[in-house]
Length: 213
Image (cartoon, rainbow, N blue to C red; front, side):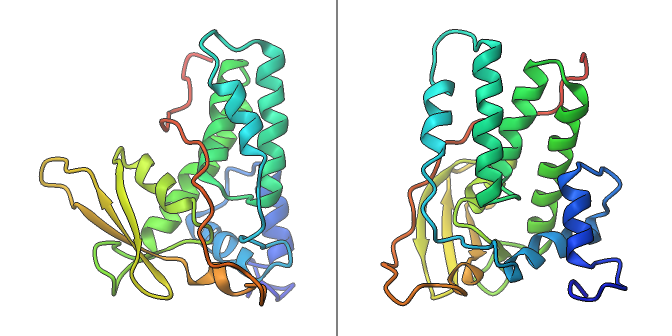
């Protein structure tokens, strides 16, 4: 479907709408967008990404961010989206920054993208058993999905060649364990790749758009 120019899921058309911030994209179309990206030549999940450090240095300030710093965060975030266009944490960062700048249009566009990406991942499996994991394209996405559920990670353990177990901090009667399938990450694994998961990049609390903007 994503290779068929006559299909509503033709990937170049879907990605063009996504990049323009089209909020009429459906959950079904987001499914083809997210998982279809695994077939794109731009999908290289094992490449190092050092851009988060620059953004983290700005976010760690103890004083309110200036407009220049907020605009710099937009630059950092957009560079990260070139590496991972569906990163929930980066879309969340843009939601925050545009909200601080009073740009409610771009704030909502990025919030919409983040919400839909997370919804697609959560619909891919229950995540409660190894036999029914949620499917992700990047190692960082499970932590972001869990953060969006207001849960915290205790420990991450690879339990098979394609599945990861994540232990969560206890919270009432909610599940304490979740499973994610990361097999797509290794589709393009270089022959000399050292199979070690990259460090987890910075995260922060997920937010709703500022309705006062």
